[in-house]
Length: 135
Image 1: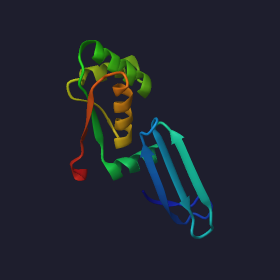
Image 2: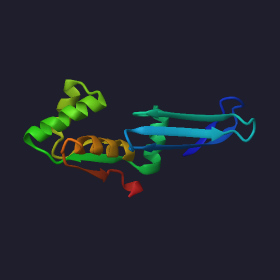
Image 3: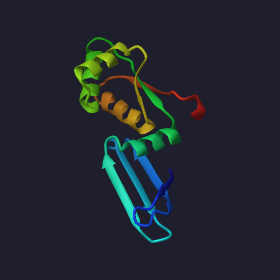
Image 4: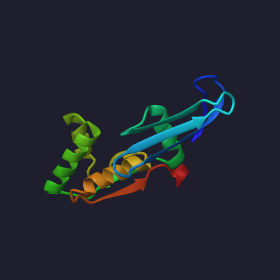
């Protein structure tokens, strides 16, 4: 994933991290400092802290979610996305306004997770890569 610094000695370490949409949105990171021997492993559910998320976006690109639904299926999709993403009514309205294009964007795992969530309720989706440099 990239270089970071050891929490004990401050020397550079190679941080290894990943994100997955298997059985929910998960992330993990670890390093072992070659200088002082400190070992760190972390993991969590949901969206990781901003520095990790930015690294995932740099590594895998930015992805967009398209929802192919109308009528009650579109309403259901918005309801599910609002709950999962913790959106306000105003933010949900912005998603509704984008229903004919990319509804939201994120890391590959984030978009895969949203596709799985919507797919379990029968809502059809697709994902597209949004950034050309990763194309």
